[in-house]
Amino acid sequence: MSSSETTTAAARTTAGQGGAVRIEDVVHRYGRGRETVTAVGPVDLTVPAGEFVVLVGASGCGKSTLLRLIAGFEQPTHGSVRVSGAAPHPGSSAGVVFQTPRLFPWRTVRGNIDLALRYAGVDRVRWPEHRERLLARVGLEGTEKRRTWEISGGQQQRVAIARALAAERPLLLLDEPFAALDALTRERLQEDVRLVAAQTGRTTVFVTHSAEEAVFLGSRIVVLTKGPGTVALDLPIDLPRGDVDAEELRTSREFAELRARVAHAVKSAAAD
Ligand code: ADP
Ligand code: MG
Image 1 (cartoon, rainbow, N blue to C red):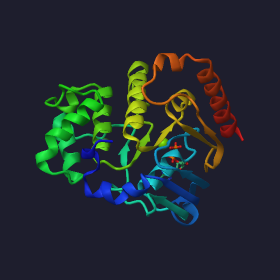
Image 2: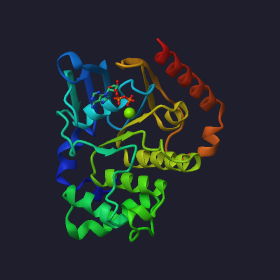
Image 3: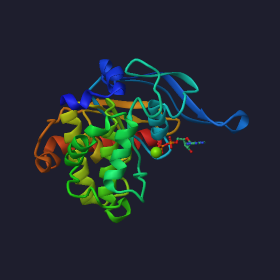
């Protein structure tokens, strides 16, 4: 990580534990009285700093709820969630990427990223240098002046990722960020996110329902049961990290075996 990536106050206060996540005996219910829905839990899960955990499970099993609890958007009904040793705070504990990019369409790519830099408390004089680095990191060089409604869905999601990185939180949370993209774009973005995570050392929690995506991205995969989700399988993934030949990796025998194993686990966890 370059020195410019650890400069903001928020990054300094949480850098000590590098975005480690500790989820203890967490249950979350929506609603009150008779109308309650238990969305997730009980879940115990510890994510050490620097790990890339992928949460996989059937639709409705509580993946997004778990991510929202880690982001601090929701308070658990029971149990405790800690990020870098403290209760998560919405907006300042983690960078978050959603399924749809949620950009400001009337602003340019540059405008969207600058807003994130402003929000992160980065000094205005340093915006150009940060912006350039972020755009390069997500492969968006040369698009600065485009309006976000003028660029493709894949590029929009790249802007959303750049924005999440701009916040310089040691924890990155992504909720099915590539679900709406075509297969080719999706593979490219998977490769970029895998590399960015390795290069920046950020702790990452990524939600998907795709076994293939999970095996490609994760250093660890956590499969959830059907709702309310609990941990059905916790599997370390020992594939090579860093700057690897993605095509070679995707076509390797180890990859195929892991994908089959995870797909099977997801299927049986959803059926139980
Ligand atoms: P997933 O992301 O795995 O599809 P969610 O976390 O979105 O699952 O949802 C888990 C369960 O909680 C589902 O039954 C869903 O209908 C319910 N749920 C999610 N959000 C809300 C909400 N805001 N209010 C009430 N129920 C909700
Ligand atoms: Mg979801």
